[in-house]
Length: 541
Image 1 (cartoon, rainbow, N blue to C red):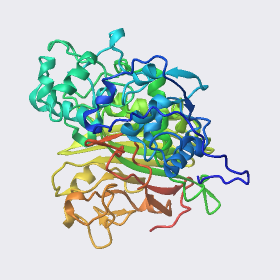
Image 2: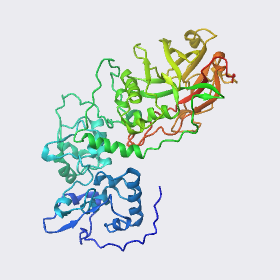
Image 3: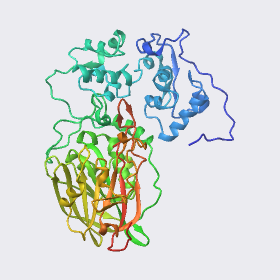
Image 4: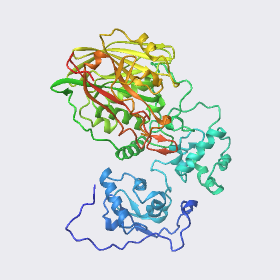
């Protein structure tokens, strides 16, 4: 997406009236410019439309050189148009401070003449849907997320994160004056943000989770809070609420912009459910790492999960660490009735997805499957789940094309596990079935793996030397995962010999990660293997 060159001669630099003060500009750290407005109503300026302006016209703005002007033009091409003046802050080289400097001189609609006082009165770094004190749409400082706090006039991401961190460690604020105790907040900051804040009574119930981005204090589990009572009734309705002070349109705009800049890989192969002239499909295993309803309500998490499934053309996915059955249902609904643009635009989605999960107490294992994989029918015959000592296993029987396929979804304890062979034999049926074991085998004893890569007589599809931690490929034991697919002799005969580990496209700019953004939907890489849909066609590994 480079700069388009034209043979048309460039216009001369346009002379525009600038609102830059003749006085020395103060440090932006104090953010004083929002405190004052100009009272000369006769001092007016023709606003520059940043959706129509050329590079040369953009360079007439204070502080905008050719490199930044080019970045604005290229960013505009990527997103189509700027919907709000505040969108300009996301352009490389702009940021909140420079946006504040040029804000009184720009617009996104038809050019118009506007007084300096009205343009200067806009918020420094808030969105168009920012909190409005005059309409009493106040942000509750005891309930607001980091993202919501950033929408407050004068609060940067760092200050908003400090407020949430202080609230997590010290408990709810009892008075607005207590905000002065937060790192980075001085008396002047507090005076500026006080009109936009409110405090709920401490005995009020907590509001529902935001549809856009859920961020609670502590940022545990990669930025997601885990509720204590994570199991919910399947009949319980899923409720969403908009962030305080944000409209539905602004939420959509923000996410679309983040989604456009979140990397999606190009599939290396256009898999068409065939291999060597025979029908084939792909099965996968993915540890979704504490998938709660709260976590999956993050639109970035949902988009990453669904696009990864669709891009790799998986037909059956064994998923682990599912804390809420509603969370798995929400993923399935996002595949069948996609509302997010990047999911809806995927043309090869059959939209015939189903999910299953045992009703066993504290169950964390489930399956997603495409009932129409190409023209290969996939149907669930039975699902059974049990606990074998401290191992959790779920056995699903599928009718896939002309074969009966058994998938044993395994969730092992967090400590090193011995006697795995005996435990698996308790859960596995006959030797003649086409059986695959799927899950994270990180904590099995090294003694259980023989030289050929077998565990309890099951052959591993992926070498156990592969690290499936998406954040690190180092050999350190502390950051290694061993997600894998194992199979018996019946399963080996069905393998096409094609398998993979997905490492790209697992992060999204809308997913929080510590105090940053761009986190992964799960730190576990999904793994997959390809099998023939007719009996005894493939060859053993």
